[in-house]
Image 1 (cartoon, one colour):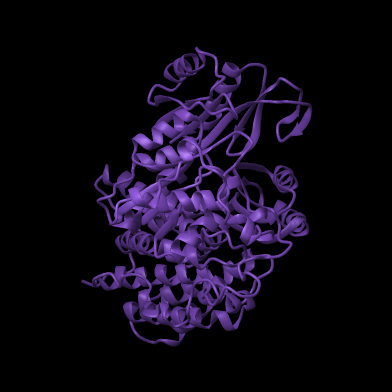
Image 2 (cartoon, one colour):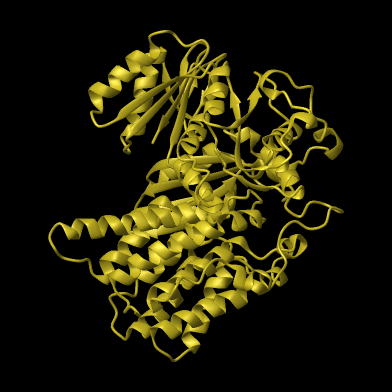
Amino acid sequence: MPHTLDASAVRAWCRLALQALGRAREEIDAINVYPVADGDTGTNLYLTMESAAQSVEAVFDGHGASGARPDLAQAFGAMAHGALIGARGNSGTILAQLLRGMTEVLTEGGSDAELLRRALRRAAGSAYLAVAHPVEGTMLTVATEAAGAAERHEGGLVAVARAAHEGARIALAATPGQLDVLDRAGVVDAGGRGLVAVLGALVDALSGEVPMGPLADYATAVPYGCGGSEGPDPHIVPGGPAFEVIYLLEAADAALPALRGRLDGLGDSLVVVGGDGLWNVHVHVDDAGAAIEAGIEAGRPYRIRVTHFGDQSRDRPDTEADTRARPASGARHQEPDSVRPRERVRRAVVAVVRGDGLAELCAQAGATVVAVRPGDPPASGEIAAAIRRANAREVVLLPNDAELRHAAGVAADRARADGVRVALIPTRSPVQGIAALAVHEPARRFDEDVVAMTSAAGATRYAELAVAEHQSWTMAGICQAGDVLGLIDGDVAVIGGNLVETGTIVLDRMLAAGGEMVTLVLGADAPPDLADRIEAHVQGSHLAVDTVVYQGGQQTCPLLIGVE
């Protein structure tokens, strides 16, 4: 039964959009070549929409206690706010602004169809304003063409939504002709493709019909995937910035022009979205510290995420050297072909880990393990050998280290060339890998399993304790040799005098944003009472939080921390 444009339609849209992005996530990741070929656009869009959907459900739950239902403005406002605070990557940030732009017209009068036309136009316009240097052939173009198609259609609500979806599909097919990097790679724009899925879900929500399914209806409009093997890799962006910096920012509107100017001078792919004192800032830079300092000057930045992708976008290892797997030993042993089963298993997980305890833990969970020796990270050839050793038709790959993302990506590409379906989940810490393994369910459909594992990893903040080897400048100030450093999501956040003190401060900061489960992974040199004392602190200060402790045996740091 068709819906009117009301709160229930917004709720249904969120649910169906999340399902559509979940089905298409891996395909969208695979064609992500612009602005940086980091292979996570589908995942970022999914996680952004997941945050939006959770926010809408929270509004419905809050009203349910009183027997009332939220109105359209409340539901749509929650959707836009949830997307804003949960936005991931360039594409997720733009999606958040598109949704926010739509909310700006909901208090205006008019029929549902006219309201949707104006909302789509306002969304496209606000997204262009949020991007420092808009580029055609991207998600922005798809949004604009969708709005134009909706404006040209004079039918009712569902017909207008269908027109917008069709306009987006046509615009998406044209993106390779507008952006050279897409044309060279033979792909359509990944963000635009995700937006088409979201608009398709809007049609499904408003029409009440069976969901339209993934993107197969237009995927053949332009061939996608990597180009031929000859010539330079089209995914490479020579000289691109090394870091993606994202943070939420509490700041007055008057502070934004100076912030935009400062960040625009530091890097590219600048997108600042939001309003009413809360902003989501996204930029690609070489100096991550300067980008964060700009936020501090403008207001109060938090939920800071810094992702290193310089190695991915600048240098590819020599093909011949990279394909030579080093002599294997221990957990890296590769079984000869004669002892491998002839028939492939359905699905396997391949996990890269540091430490014997972590290797044993992942192996007990059913994963094929690539063990990392201190100072000797595995080459892509070793990871590819582990994928072959898993002997599965479908493989979920967990690098568990931001520095290994590129090598894991190369290994995944090789396995795909051999006919193996591989999903690379960008876990940046072993605790994210543990969280992903905990929800792994081989009986599920592959896409559903990957989305569940990706979501679990993404919902796990990670930290570690390390001992400074020499005096140096950090994000938390100057440290001296022997100081204990508490790193949260890869950045030094605390400088302390001992492991217990620093660990408790780190956990208090992480749990201030909420959490239900703390994971502690002890290193080889961790003091015997470290876990007990930190666990006692959690039990005494955070009553609703559970703690689980593992003996990791990693040589690199005495303690890894995860908060889910």
